[in-house]
Image (cartoon, rainbow over all chains, first blue to last red; front, side, top):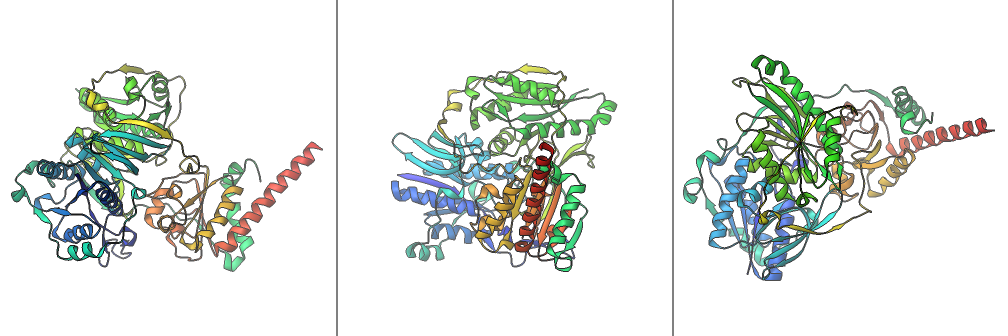
Length: 279
Length: 355
């Protein structure tokens, strides 16, 4: 029996975020919340392997009650059980405190139902830190394989996993003992269309809720703001360099516009340098 | 009196250092200079140092010294030949516990990101990812200047400055090309300190069976001198043919904005911006890119930026040295014509000179 645990996060669809030009504030209204795309692909891979090996996929998410919809979406995509880790005391957690909470929960689930593979997305699209996966692996002392693009094999008898991970320079084929933690690229698996029974089940699914008190295994000093070594010192819109000259090709003609632009680049010594002495 | 150590992790693979290591060494030197006065007054000493891991990589330690390190801590072991998370993070943690650096900077490459989160968690300290600004600043209530790490947040729509009050080291990861290369001094002298960190058998259990070199995908946009990037204004994936032609003519490479990559018009390796690569070429041409903040933070350090967009109010014009308001399908062909004419002119001049 294979048991995969997938950590998922709900994120604002960052492609839709914008700044109010008058106030400089973040516009949150109307920004849809989605399952972090990398997590959806990680989940799809876990579900693929469950179908191959037989077993179970559990998902865990830390966040407010509104994250229930994301857990339901995971059920829709083939997860069997969902845990929502939610408490006001967890709010304001940085990546260190987040990895503490997730590691504690994963450990507790593992003690009840041993886990073979922990799946994470390679990063969340709202923070882009890619820090929580490695953090959880360190806390649980699990071998970690980041940037996974393909799981070649999970051998439950030999207790090992073989994964292809992509770096900037090459693809590595890594073998690690189980249990292991894998952080996934989108190539790991296609997100499937939900089968009707899963879809129906997801509509009424209630995740198991874990709070500070109900779980009983969290140390208050390590969670939320208290457990976070980093703090936001200030926020602002970035300073912009001074805008250059704007040329309207509709007014002066395309050829003239290009000539003017290139003349400016020439004056800055740029074109000469990139064209290797061509003037 | 205490020693304030500013550390850089030197990333190397196959005996070659990643240039981001030197870029960070330049930053560490500057950070050290920012606390010099304060340290002198307190009787503290300030040090710019590196940590280097690998197998027979002393030559890289020498290189680090020439880029400004006064001391390199070197863990040189056969088990560290190829990068693996566990032996690498445990080695760094071991040496860091011994010397207690105040700051530790790591390149935000795939290797560095894999490593940084593990090191920070193991040391139970704060880590700020993908910083675009770093300085040692005064903070109310702090006895010493703290590392102020600025990074884009919320998809690059705002900048957040993060600090870490108590835990040490204060860690940041920084992408390649965010900061310039420091000067190279071939006469520089420094010290190499060899360290040994004992590892368990379990630490090296995960092993690499094979390396697959994928030639087709190797687009090195980070260190390219010329980048021509296309955005949604191209209208269709076929629009990239024109971008490719201009890039080719300029001896450059093709970049892209995030929506084009998300739409599957071009591969992720070409993506410029906060969620793609940070670049600083000599010449950056942005065609049909509106200029979302997340794109701008990835290319605004380019030496010279030409933007082409039909919308005169496109934010990309805010960072451009020169902007052309117009239809890219007219402007780029005109650029191609202009460049070809320049090349022919040089060719005929050199023929004349030879005659």
